[in-house]
Each structure stands twice: as structure tokens, then as C-alpha cells.
Image (tube, rainbow, N blue to C red):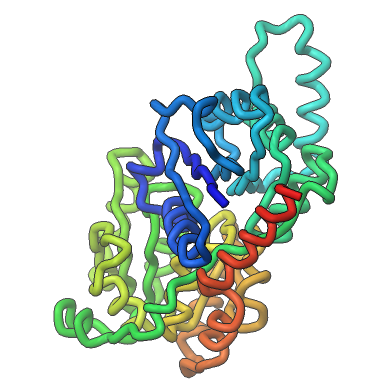
Length: 343
């Protein structure tokens, strides 16, 4: 079996969850004797001997290539990485209005309209959570028969995370940790920093800030708080990152939504207590082993962190993640979906 992987060009610039998902899915599929080819924008897809094209992200960047694949009757599997805090019914209404106006418009499609078209052109859609699946089904009126949840995964190597390196280098232990795209408003770092104005605990943020107004506000709050420690983005294979997960007491993702937040899974595997947004399907992964918070409530985020700090670390979440979400298991689930499409 030969699978072509397609991802938006921006994946090279952002070392985030989408890049991790694609790379580790490919790695473990290869261990199952699946040949994975990373498709370049320069490749002539009509000349490629590929059984299935696996497209990562229902983004506007991928709209053109998905349309070409459909025109050529290629098999398409889509990992949409798609979520919105808007209600599915509201999105559906907006799309209906747009369709009615299409005859008098200039042919310009909204982001939601393009995402719907990308999903509609796929033979099979593999969302990461049941909440994402429900949104696609209800907002885009796509049949559940075309949707199959395949979760994100986590590397087993984080089981061996050792706090020693981080503790020695930074002089910190049992702190609260955030890892992610700190400059992205969706990650809600500004609310996290607001919480720590009157929470006398150490906060470590690993992630880059940009020159945006949002980032400047975050940096201003951080500069005024001696308990906040900022570290630039670390490579995913960094020993210091793994050590930070093991050294912290609580890992927090108070995002507007997550599907589900691979960094939280990594921290959980390293033994950290988890505080995570209640929005986007995180309960699929963390069950009763995490503290869930509302991203729109400073009080909720603060209480979630305080409650998690009081808890002893345990093996329960770690065992749950190992049993269900390591990348080898996710690759097996993905391969089973490929086989369905080829029948």
C-alpha cells in the first residue's frame, strides 16, 4: 500500500500538533509496511502511483490540491483538524445564506464554505475527537457514514522523562507548565497570566511570542510577575522539553478549544497532573483523569490549577494513555480506515 501525505505549506513554519500528527502517523505506518510519500507542491499528482492521498487539515491552503485530486478521481482521506466555538446550527445557517447569495456574488467563498467543500470531496474524514466529528456532521450536513474518529497519539518516550535536567538548568520544580504556540490567541495565554497575578505559584511558559498586540500584552503581564518564567519554543525531540514535563506538578492548556492538545498527552505520559479546556473533545482522551476548565472564566482556570496542585501525581492517566493513545495504536487504526477506502 502506498499513501501520499499532503499538508499545508505552513506546517514547516509551525512546530505544532498538526506536524507532530503527520510525522508520527507516517513513522508508525512505515512500521506496518505501508509506504508513505510526502507530496510536494511541485509534484504532478496525475503522474504519481499512489493508492490513497491522506490530506492533513481542511484548510484553505489545501483547497486547490483537494479539488484537483477529486477531479482526477483519486482516493482521498482527510484529517480535518477542524473545530469552532460557533454552534453547528449557526454555521449551517451562514452557509445556506452564502449559497443563496452565490448567484449574485463574485464567487468568493468564506472559510467555512471552503472547509465544507474540502470535507465533501473526501472519501473518508478522520477527525480526532467526537466533538469534531459532530461539528462536521451537523454544520456541513455530511453523513456520519463518511466520518470515523481516529484520535491523536503520543510518543512512548515521554514515559522515560526525567526531571533532573530541567531542575538543574532552571532551578525549578513542582511548577505549573504551559507548552504551545503562546502567541496564538486560541491558546488563551493571556487569561493564564491573569490567573497568576494573585496565584503565588511558579509558571513556566515554553513557546514563542510574536510582535502582535496580543503577544505584547502577554509579555507585559509576564514582565511584571517574577513568578513567570519564559522559555523559547523547544524542538519536539528536546531532552529539556521532556524533562520540563516531568519536573512540573501541573500542565495547563486553558485554550479556547483543543483537539485534544498533544502536549497535554505528552505531559500526562511524563506524570504531570493535567488542567485542560473543556471545549473541543479533550474528555475523549483524559476522561476523569484531568481537571477541566472553562477558557472564558479566570475563576474556573484558577480553581482548576489550584485543585490540580493539591493532588498527588498518580499512574492512572499515564496507564490510560499507554493503553489507548500511543502512536503505534493510532497507526493501526489509521491503516484499518485506509483498507476500508480501498475495498
